[in-house]
Length: 288
Image (tube, rainbow, N blue to C red; front, side, top):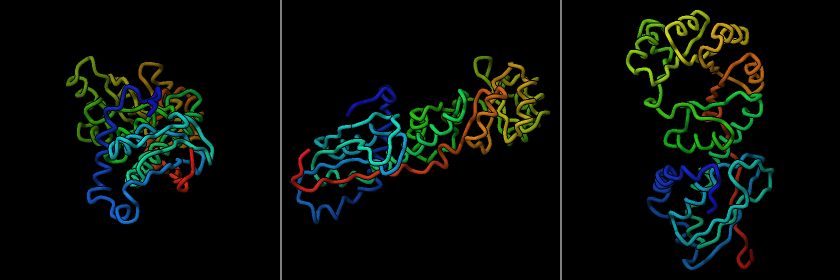
């Protein structure tokens, strides 16, 4: 399995995901393959994109088969991050037919999910005019590491990994604390000077209040283009300005022109359709 520049330092998260998925699908084995496929039968199968996509997750795809049968071999034809057209051959799988069939659906599910996220991310990144596009915590339960990897492959950046990774004061935090200013002051008193405090704001009064209280990152939530531009003027470089809330690709260029630093987009993970992929077995006797 060729490891691309995208995943060389981050393979540690793959096996837990793969093992959970295989346990879900193979806890009772593969009764159909046991019934109709001879145990000694070998096969060659081609992984093909049925629609255009940005490929992400080939190391995960290969690892599914390796965890089932160490003798199965996966030869990648492209690298993660490659934009491909329909009909492109992405990889070839060789090995025992039963082993390939046992891993087929799990491998396709993971690769299709990751490639769908990478494809959606690339769409937003290409529309952003150089502005950073980041994900959110709106990821598939149990697959956050895969989703975050796919975002990076698509050209985006990751937001906080979990609730312990950074301070981000949201609307409900502010309500309980008595407003954004009180919440920011409480957070800064708790975490110390080495940790940035981010605060979600929904109007210009909250922008001013959070900024004066010392917030280092302001997350402009569901604000109009005019209010975003005014918020950037008020901030005047004193904090990172991040926009969020139902953002569409066609809006990103306007946000970038207004001076927004980061667009955080939940849709690249929570609404990305899976890439359309197939694993096609060659007829018995066909050569490579």
